[in-house]
Image 1 (cartoon, one colour):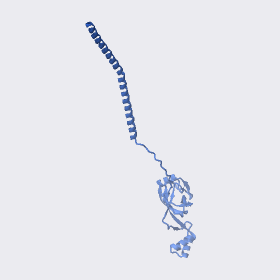
Image 2 (image 1 turned 135 degrees about the vertical axis):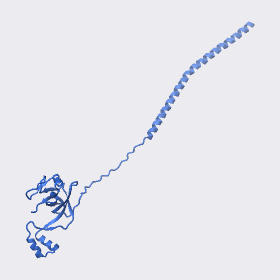
Image 3 (image 1 turned 90 degrees about the vertical axis):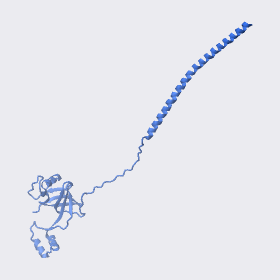
Image 4 (image 1 turned 30 degrees about the horizontal axis):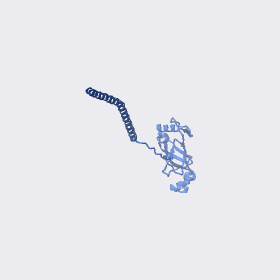
Length: 230
């Protein structure tokens, strides 16, 4: 009986050892099963962090984009303004062809200014002498009748100057482009360039030696010609 009791104690101790081994083995197995779970948590944590970083980058990019000033195109209505060419000079409305003295010339603009005057002969001369010079009709008539062909009564009562654009008009001169005077009383055409050069080299040949006859067409001076009066 005593032997059986001892055997029973050994048997209980053995069972406890076996149970302890089994529990230890079970715990070890459970610990091994937990390792992959920890790896998954780490991977999930990395994925979450990456997603958060991506979200942060996207938010930053959106913020930077919003800071870029937007250019707004506003449609405008263009107004076309017609440009009216205004002449650089003005002449009286009642322009007419006439004899004239050459007063001035501006090579920078091509504009020449003339002083109109009238040549009176015959009855026009008699009437003028009586009305403005104190002559009697008899005395004025006697004087005018004795005029030579080259004589006349000079009338200049209007101080207003007339302007011609020498670049636009026909120019006729009693001088050649080289400055030599023609032998006869007939004028020859001259280009504006030659006219400007003649004025630059020999201005007196343009302004003083002869007076001019200005032809007016439709209210505009169209021809400027030196005039030979014997």
